[in-house]
Length: 76
Image (cartoon, rainbow, N blue to C red):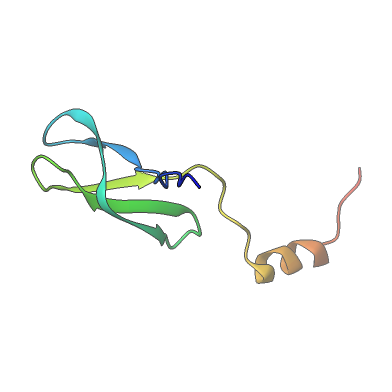
């Protein structure tokens, strides 16, 4: 029985100190205040903190969507 090596996704970001694209080490996925996801970690060369915002829009809070639904629509 063959074992397949597990493939780990190493996020890539831009290091402003090295001025190059590198893999982010010790990466941790975080959620920002606006609801978007981001990855925070360190540069493998210089150790500077790297931060990469992931794609996708922020999700609307339930209170916001309820207040928009209660507003009357105006038709002229």
